[in-house]
Length: 553
Image 1 (tube, rainbow, N blue to C red):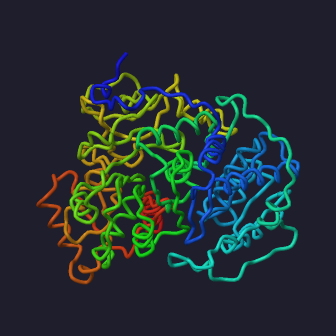
Image 2: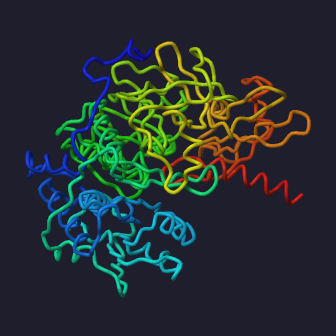
Image 3: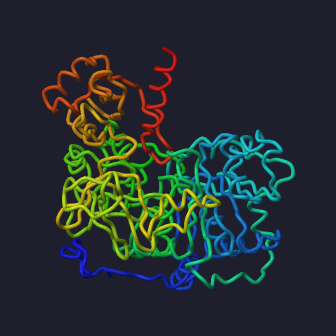
């Protein structure tokens, strides 16, 4: 049966797709076809496809020499770097399962995820290893491979270096040096990934928004499918130049920013951390054509005083995910980045980003996009989870198709609650129009009930962004003895407005510009909002702060 979004489908893109092989073998293809082409650049250090493929082989051989067997977990505690790329694809090529750890983790979080995954091998950045040591014997590791960002430092850097590349390399006893590990690896047969749909590639842990983080089981088929669809959807080619600054341990960075460019033979420009200055210089220095980012990063670039001095005309595609982009920012971006197609995406860890993407040939303002190849989506009743709702009716977003995880690692009950009859229940609220374009309204748990009305924080945030003084906004529900709940807005002001505007003025503006039931009743100014490493504003942290205030009364 035809889906409603097929009426506007780009005929150059297949409606369904099946990957032919595991992801590392696509890189092997590029190494054979374009061996001397630059695969990645890292602050001036360049690596060709031939060099990258050989390093991936050596890492895979090294794991085999350590005794790694097919299906064993290898944890990566690394920032964006050539080492992350090599370790990631090397683990997959060796038949291992990648567990990518958040570089912001402290010892207790490391202890939980490493033990839950059962990882015995860890690849870790030298400055992060002391946090691993803090866990002591609560973590049982057989092999620790240490690397420093200085391992791939260019003699003549082309971009401002992060502090980690200026400091001395750290060494630790009873660990293996990354470069020595590669150089000393002996060639050996590598296992074949024979069943893409069954053999596991990743255990990708959720952000823990509903209790402790859970490991989403991602197969080689899930991974290869989503990465290849990115290439087909965006028209990636050998001429594409991509900026990789989103964290590669997160699914958006891993799939969209790191893997898809390399699988297509493009040029990957890696930054280990975000700063508007370095991003601007990277875009200009490398003539970047594709930049996938977040609302938070785009806001920082727009608010950066020097942004008008840089030429961003090389950008062909500017894509944003993590949180909906307020419409008011589109007009500002159009002036700053005049030649790019703007778009958004929606997805989850459990779908490895697969959900909805703006079609390049037919973007629609105010909407995220449509389901891409092989992916199905519908909006169902919020209470029952049953029945597909009519166009423009608000309900829960559910996703079907080959992007769905197999389940949660060692979490059968949670798996059954999330995946029902082949559909993944996202816990997100949205609506689809007659052509299948999606509007994301927020999470079910974030929805605010005010005097019987449903208030979606995302909508209130979008309205707040229309105020000229507001740089960032996050809205949560707080208890209200009369209305049940009321919206509270946490706001970061633009630099030019700090000390010049008061909370009362924002409330008065909201009263003039929003319905009574949805306007914020309390405003709190913040210097910054809590964010994940992927740039998402952590509203659950703000909600917990409010609960703590109530408990202390």
